[in-house]
Image (cartoon, rainbow, N blue to C red; front, side, top):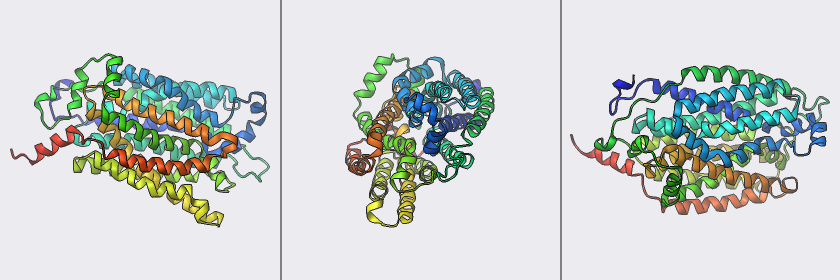
Length: 442
């Protein structure tokens, strides 16, 4: 297959590779938030174990993923660049299946669940940092934002699945005498399913096709040169941090992705702050449904209109009213049911814009920071979002979530600042070049 690849000739297997990465991405999200939708029932089920080991807090299961990512994001990017996309994902698939199975089979022991969660958290950076590399190696320029968007979409599907399925197995009504029962059963089911799918993904992975020198191809993204550029890690990081557009995007992702991580991790606490007693996980589901739509609409629009900057600006503007409604829902309305309905609409709109901007942002930085390998630029953005997400989760959790409403209100001001800094971004050189090529007659 590799011998047949020419400039502009991309194999059909690219869609299989994309499907594999989407499956792995969805599974790692499912494992990340297994207990988030039913945090209060889970605390009841593991009550005596938590009493003996206070550090075994349920919210720490989700927080663990973000903490580990801070330390392993750059090493994961180095691994992808060093041993290749196929080998990196195959290792991740094997470990994903093994730790998911361990977590499921020993779901009654919260300590073992934490150990398995740590193993899953270690492989998460490789899976998350792989999408722009896959898009750049396997897809033509006009499909790359879409490929990134579909990968991000799979993250949302994983979150929606866990938020929808887990409460159906776990007794989440506090008035029920069996409150918290059923959690080990669903964790075990997740473990078996993840192990089977991961093994299938391992068998489907292939090496990327050979890329030609794109300097002679004016329609191709200049970041393709990065495949043949062996830059040291320190030089890659230096180039990223010295790029003005990259620094702006790091700030944007600290706000947008940080809020997404915080809201996803504390969805049950946000429901409680809105006086919702039943842990139904609908707030996170609404955000993910909106994100699924946005992750397809905005990358398609970006590829079609040949612009990254304007799409990022549009998405950030759309975040403002959605965050404002979520932050002031209890002030705008008095009825608890009406407050909850407004919060559902607000989180759906927030997901539509913030998660729709994600794949466009990943592809944008891959284009403006070439020849730095894509895994480094994407990893840096994820790292920024994870770091800020941790800070937001910690701040929101202080004194039993006392500061959560205030932080949501402050996030509106941060988003307004994001709108202003986006105006300082430069348009992607690849988009400018592609637009000129399209307008130039043959």
